[in-house]
Amino acid sequence: MDAIEMNKKAVCTLQEWDPFEIGVGSYDAEAADVIADLQMIDHPSELAKSIQKIYEHSFEQWIPIEKCVEVSYKLIALKYEMKSII
Image (cartoon, rainbow, N blue to C red):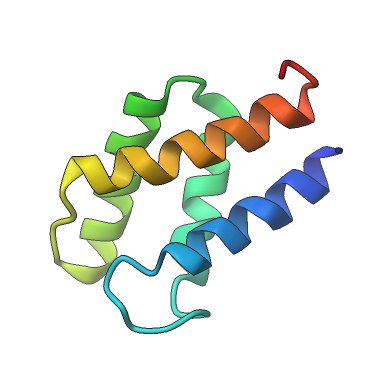
């Protein structure tokens, strides 16, 4: 898997996550910000904090860190798959 394919899968993962239940396709800007952070972050809890901050900033609603950790593990797994680590 290359970086472009990983990014597409990561966007799909974030769209399916739908933390505020407002529908797929409602998180394009947030997904782009999370993908940018995913390029630099390798630890799920660190990525989860970033996800929480990004979504809270956009929607002025708080997401429990546990929910952010769940999706961050999926995203980190995609990243490791791209790098052929797993």
